[in-house]
Structure formats: C-alpha cells, structure tokens
Amino acid sequence: MDRRNFVKVAALVPLLAGNGRLGWALTDVREKAVEAAHGAEEGQLAARYELTLNRVLHGDSPAYTEEFLLADVRPEAVRRFTEYSGDLSGRYIGALATVARTSGRSFAGLDDLVAKVIAMQKPDGYFGAGFHAGSPIDEDLALLWGNGRLLVGLLEYCRQVPEPAVLAACKRLGDWPVKIGPLMLSDDMREAFGAKHFASSYICWMQQTEGLANLYMATKEERYRKLAEQVAAVIERRHGDHVHGYLTSLRGVMDLFQATGDVKYLAQCEDAWAEVSGSRDALITGGVPEGWSPNNHRTEGCGECDWARLTLMLWKATQKKVYLEAAERTVFNELAFNQFSTGDFGHRLYTDTGLPAQGAARAWWCCTLHGLRAFPDVEGSVFRSTADGLWYDLPLDGRMAVGETTAGALRAMSTSTMGQNGTVRITITAVGTGRDALFLRKPKWAESLEIRTSGSARQYPAGDGYVGLERVWAAGDTVEVKYAMGLCREVVGSEAAGEERVAYFYGPWLLGASGADNPAYFNELTAGNRLERGKEQSVAGVQPKRGFLVPVAATEVACFPAEYPDQPGRVVLRAVAEQTGMETTGWELRFLGVKQG
Image (cartoon, rainbow, N blue to C red):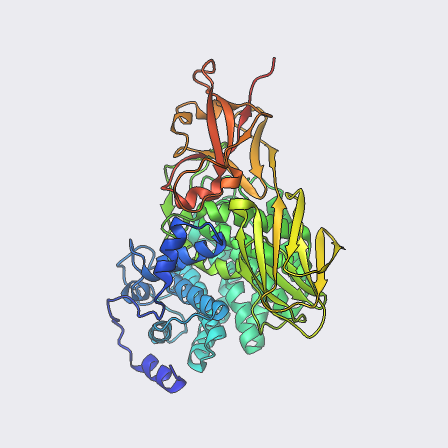
C-alpha cells in the first residue's frame, strides 16, 4: 500500500470492520506447519515457528479475525480482556511485522489492519475507553497496559513499513504517558497498585519503558527518553506481582541502554537478572512462573518468552556465557514445553515435583502472540557475525541473512537434527573475497564435537569453548557438527519432600516421566515413587509415532512405586520438549532415588 492510499484508508475506514479472516499472502504455511507437526525430524525450531505462525494465521478456537482483533481498540466486550485496550491487536501487529521484517515474508492484510487501528485513536492519543486521570482504577491500569503493548506493536510495524501516518500515531500515543507521567510516577500510585492487583498492578506503568525507549530511537525526541529513564528508576520486583510485566519493563530498560549507551541501564538489568536467577522463582525448566513468590503456582508463556528474550539481549550486550547457557536451557525446555500441539502458548500449573495436566490453558489473548514474537529473536541469536568471522552460538536452526549490517562477510544457515542423531548441518550461503573463519561453540553438555567439512579447513581451538574453522569458503560448502551427549543428573531441592531429588538431563534436554507414556506411574502417591540411579538405559530405538520427538534422549529407568515398592516396574523418561507433539499430559521432573541399605 502506498502512503497516499494508507492515509486515505486510515481517514475513511468505518469503525466497524469486516467479519472475515484477514487476507494474508501466505499460501504454503498451513501445509508446512502440518508437515512439521507430524514429522519434525529436521529443523525443530523451524517447525515450531511454522506451527505457531500457522495457528495465528489460520487457527481457530478462537480465530484472529479482523473483528476479533479490533475489539480491544473500540473497545467492545465481545471477548475476554478487551479492557486491556490495544493489547491483543498490538501484539498481533508487532509479531507479524517482525516476522515479515526478519524472514522476508509478506502479510497482505497487515497494512489495512494497522490503518483501521490508528483511525480509532482518541484525541488524547490513547486507544479504548476513557481514562480516569483524577482517580485511576484497575480498568485504567489495564488500558494503560494495552496501550503500551499497542505502541510497541505499531513501532515494530514502522520498522518494517516506515509509514509517516503510523509514526505520527505512535507519537500521539507516546505523548499520552508523558502527559500523565507526574501522576503515574507519584508514590501514591505506586502504593495504590501493588502486587494484589496483579495484571492491573503498577507493572502496567513500568512496562512503558519498552515503547518509550523505542519511540525515542525512532524519533530522537528527548521527552520520550526522559520519561523512559524516570520509569526505569521506579522498576522493582514485588513479591507476588506479575512476572511478564516486570520482565517486559526490564526489556525496555535494555532498549534504553541500546538507545543511550548508558551502562547503568545494562547494570540494572544484569543485577535484576542475577537476583531472579538466584531465587526460588528460577525453574528447573529454565523458565520463570507467572507470578513471583509466593504467587508462583503456574507458568505463563509471556513470562517465559520475556525471560528468553531478556537473557539473549544480555548475551548480545555482554558476551557473558552465563546468559547464553541460560537462554539455551530456556529455549530447549521451557519454551518448547510451553508450546501446545495447536501452536498456542499458555499456562501450566506446577508442584514441587512436576507439572500436572490439570489447569493447562492456551492463553490466546497474550501468550500465543508473544510466543510468535519470540521466535525471530531466538532465530536471530543462532549466529552472530564479528570482524573475526561468523559464530555459531546456539545449536538450533537459524540463518545469518545476507545484507545484515555486520562486520564479517560470511553468511550461513543451519538445520538441526540433534534430537534424531545429535547433528547440526551448516550450509554457507554467502562469502567474502578471501579466507574467513567459522566458529563453533562446544556447549558444557557436549562431551566433544565431531566436525566434518565438505572441503579442507584449518581447525584450531579459538578459546572460550569455541573451535575455529578457517578457509576460503564457497557458497554451498557444508559443515556437519555432531555433538557427543550423555545422560546426567542434577540435584534439585524439594521443600515438600524433605529428601534429595534429582532431575535428569540428556545434552540440553530436561527429561521427565509423562503420563501419556507412563500411565501406571501416576497415582495418588506419585511424588513418592523412586528411581534406581546409575542403571539408566537408552531406549532411543523404540519410539512412539508423533511429532517433535527427541529420540536420542529417551531413557528407561527401574521404578519402585511408593504404593507397592515390592513390585518394581520400568519408567521411560523423555525430553519435556516432546509435549508439543502430544495432547496435554502430566509430567514428573524431580525424582527420589532408591532407598539405600
């Protein structure tokens, strides 16, 4: 859509939009996603990405129709959470705009949707119902939250389509928090909207950092930077409060660091990350709960995505391996486990020992779209380029796009079959004019790397756990990396049991006992079952027929049921990441050992 027609649509579009699905120019995504969900033998990250994209574009229960999306900017109470004005519509716009920008895909209906959204902007700059500036209530904080998400989504759209009318709407929307800033920054507001308000607590104001920092980067207008800095100064982690809101606020502080170069914002985020990582809210899956302790009874896809994205931002800013290793655990386990077979993301209850099937929920109103938005950030962290060469940091599917602004000339793409045979295949897609280096990371969980190249290359230790390969590359050259992996046990605490428990890992994958594969394992005293340590056996050759399998990790262990220990049986431990290929089922993750003596 050209700019003249865009402005025309924005000015003339009726407030009641059409009922049908949006007309996306993407014909093959459904077929790819269906194939990926049933096979997924190669490229599980790509398969997961396609599964969620397909759900957003073509899925139902509910379908993301134009009417459905616009309901929160009118607002109109035809579905849940329209009081969070701009939340769903903003996430949808931002996720698809980012997918388009990073993958080269096109979504034909996105321009029209954005035009219809900005046509509903209120004179004061915000979207939705009225705001009670004199004495805000929970609905006002909800509106504040949704408008913050919409500002981010519209700015992400502007990165893909630099449309002046949309940027002008962003500025009007950004001017609104500037106007109400004195009220929202007051001690009275901070105290009035504590953690008991949860999703409508003070986090609805704190998360404005993301939109404001990005608006400053887009406009260089100082009022947005100044307010972002003022908000950053009042961010705090409150007991029982909403994790997604807090972590989104920190991601905004990282954006503020990027915008200003002020290292105090980086230090703020590093300190906050370290505090969470050392707390009881750091889950064995590599994730975080929906609410901070003591309100930490279930997970949330949004918070998991925020944790992964924040951790990857810290890795890119500092090159500290602790962040890369933590992000790796989150992506391989919590993000994978949280993804439903439909492609949705959402909630799971959890206990001291596992995650029951009861209480699982597909959070289409936020988590599904936040999950889609996270995929480009994960894929964009697989490779990085420096003046020294190209670095393969995460053993996942990924690509280093030609034309990306980096110092190095080498570009590549990778396809992972790690879950099948422990192998990743890297294909060179673009080269420079001389010798260049490709650096391969040896993770802590890999005993060794077996490297094969399609031509001779100088291989050498590059320090910090990396192996360098140097040669004059040609487009089409391949490198095959096989990761030698094994089973390991990690001691974990259990407040309820009072005994030592262990979690099992195979390579980067957390293993668990699922109800779907081990129905007899689960009963009233499940948490008291004991596994015989030291005699675990691989059962990689015996696999069920379903998608998203990780057969290399499948392990069988002798089990002594708490209810009848004199009749031992066997239990199969599988990667929790396999949950995506299954109907929702219960999992045990922390196990007691056989009694000694």
